[in-house]
Image 1: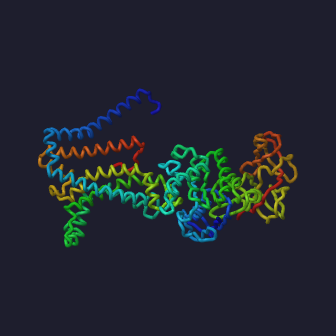
Image 2: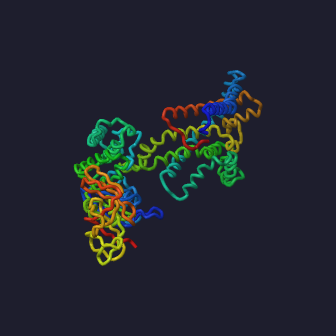
Image 3: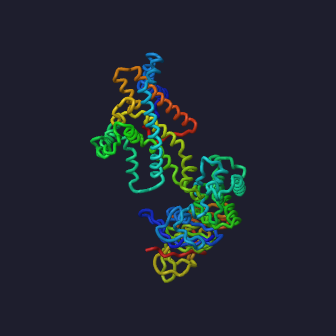
Length: 348
Length: 279
């Protein structure tokens, strides 16, 4: 099922949570809403679900207007960040809840409900825990129960609000792959909210980067990482370094010296030069077109050498990763040549 | 404090404990024991006679009737108020919370007077009510109204912090799964708050049965008709009928003890710790 929002605006008192947002998820797509806290991503998800209502704009399911429908009538699956499992019901009853509250005419027989609940628990690999209570489960297990519960009503659209936010790193990675697999097998359309860029890049078909109530970029993970639309996206997605420079007649100047760096042409004036830690090479001190840097600390770890360096007039420290085994000594002065970088004019 | 020798700390602890115990014995235990001692001083026969006298039975019945009306009404109001405060944001929310506490901050006598001023013969609605032959003051409806007013905060104050802490997540989950508002309340909200609610009901009930001041103002003290147990106790006492007075008082005290036992049993069984509403 496709879902679209069209020019949605939402304010909470004086705070503009969404400033006119339009977006479409195609059938079968897995979409990530990525942004810092306060960027409006959760509000957008809740508006898609019918848990909040926009001040203006529309929500469309398969092209049909559902803006006025509440969450009960939208027939979506919603997974909450803190699971929202019902503490007084056992796991099987939690999963069966969506079936047991159906109107009598539509409600399956008791035996059918039990069977379906067990089937869903098996699907999330918790078939043996039906009699347990939520408090007796680990965080990862609870989130899988929450997912099974959301799937019980056969939703075509699955909305997840920071589904792995409360879990530790290892469980997160496992669940991520498992969720992606489930999404593909069940033919769902899914939208999930996260502030974890690694999660968004690994899991989603397309990443929607949000900032201050606006969508700043919608693209495939690779594109978001390699060709960030704005300085904000470059900063937020992946590790990066930032150098304040000046553009003069198409040349990038730092400390009065021209830098040798391949960038798109930019207008004259102050600008910020962004580059990834692995897009720089150490060269000799004073090499033409290289940034003068002093090594602070270097460490060989996990097949890469991590170097922290200081460039006069630049704050914070510069982060470099090289594939070589050579670990430069602290305090050494070197040059830094950038193989790839992006230039963004400094906002006035 | 940390620099003091350990023996000093122990001494201080024992002194504090002794002080607390002595205070408790003097001001709580002793009066309670004296009620039962006085009640049974003239023998069990007199005790049973006193509590089975027609006026006493009428007072007991009236007290039970008033509690049976006031408690359910306040459960309904308390739930509605707590739900509104905890699950929604609206202007005037803090004003509402303050208003809910009003019966606690106003003297019960004043609470009673309010109803006399409103519904008494000389009151705002007095003439209107007299025309229609409806009596509220010096009758059962007045007693019920005053009791409802005085006991209003117990359920609401017990539930507001609990429901605020629980938030809206569980209800949103229930509705997203297709539950109606009523189903969400019945299957999700109510089980989440049941122990807090029961605790509020116990406190509300104890106060409804024991309320004196407000009820005294609106009752009119008509024997066998508008006397509740606390009022009956006072009348007997003023007539120097101490044995009978203490006998009825002991029934009220028993009720209070029963409430305490129930509350402790609940806390022990479910590890629930009451928040707010400490009156």
